[in-house]
Image: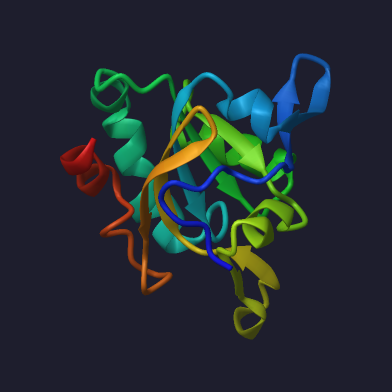
Length: 160
């Protein structure tokens, strides 16, 4: 079942880059007591994610945070090493990258997709959501994985 506005995020564990390498962070660690824009993408460095989706959040980061948002986080079904490289290459300092390497979070919120037809295996659908203290307040899911229209930074700013 797909997560809906008003639902609490399920418990899941991400991998993040810590001072001593990869470390685990739970949904509570990321979202409890915070207003977080969470952006889900099918894969780091994939064309729509790299050229269309992430750049808007990098460019609009300050404007989004100025709307009472504590953090912007990006999650993808990639390992933390790939996400770290993507963050660095994209100039996305100040945006949190949450590795969902086994698609556990994507599956738990019902927003997984099968990318095996493209050799990608299980992936996350493309979306943007506002999570307030663990509760989904806004949820914009793309109908077409290769587009970043309803889940892009500009669209999200219109409803924040």
